[in-house]
Image (cartoon, rainbow, N blue to C red; front, side):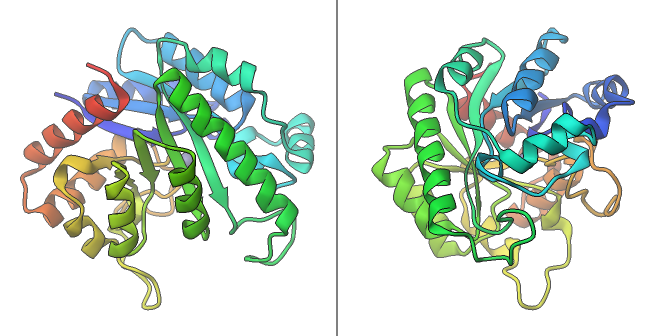
Amino acid sequence: MPFIDCHTHVQFAAFKDDRKEVVARALRDDIFMVNVGTQQDTSQKAVELAHEYESGLYAVIGLHPIHTGKSYHDDQELGGGEAAVGFTSRGEVFDYGYYKKLALDPKTVGIGECGLDYYHGTGNMEHGTLGVEEKNKQEEVFRRQIELANETGRALMVHSRDAFSDTLRILKSAGAHDGIAHSFVRTIDEAKELLDLGFYFTFAGNITFKPKADKISADEVIKYIPADRLLSETDAPYLAPVPFRGRRNEPLYVVEVVKKLADLKGLSVGEMKEQIWQNAQRVFKIS
Ligand SMILES: [Zn+2]
């Protein structure tokens, strides 16, 4: 029974020099991984990477809300080339047919990461000041991806930042199911809303950080969520868990997340790993 990193980005530019070694390290320790796309190029690469291995790698494909319009540029994601920088200054128009083809690939287990991000905004704008037009565009692209997940029977990998009420409204009205809330650090009441929709919750390395005084601690919400809805992730190259905090993250470190989840749920690491693998099999329809 493997560990599983349910949301990672080994196909990103951050791993261009040692991708094979990073994957080999994870597989050697029996850690499976789901590489998640953020736009056409990283989605395509997630599928291609999965095909380079007989087993242990899967893909989730889709368009991240920050790439529906002009967005900040992150070298770790797309690299520093001119084309990549150009892309983040214009964004992407969601092409349903392009993503449907990727969605139907046998290595693809989900659609995303999709959702709403009112935090990052565009360019140099102040946080929390995203305009109505940009919000509407994110909503439209999110709805198309829910439709794609429903049509193809794939799980829905949801990214939501500073946008919980709009996210919930859209999920409900679009009839979303088989959903996964990625890197979920919200309140118990909000978790309950998603549990009622049948959602799963994947937690990343930030649950091992000491929470800032003004921030919600993930501990209480993890204790509240039933063990059969919990998943583990790294969100590598971001959010490296303690004791690797501050370094480039990688799937190998998902074990630290599982340890923390086990601790909060009063389970052994082996029991937590087994439960997470069963949950992943159920939501991603893998065996
Ligand atoms: Zn991510």
